[in-house]
Length: 85
Image (cartoon, rainbow, N blue to C red; front, side, top):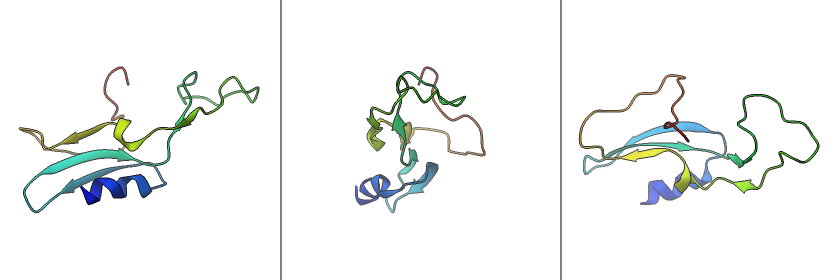
């Protein structure tokens, strides 16, 4: 629980893999991520206000997995967002 609270303190977006003493593992994207509903971030946005930020995405709403039943985690510069995110 305290580690998940610390995720909110991280500023630079990154993938974080973690494990605890009880054998639980997890993957979480963390970082300062603006909400910009009309823009996908692939190209620069015009400066006319139409694509302004509407807030910051809470870490709870970012892609994450906690203690999957099977499999593991890896990340190496690939697109890591779920389909439709």
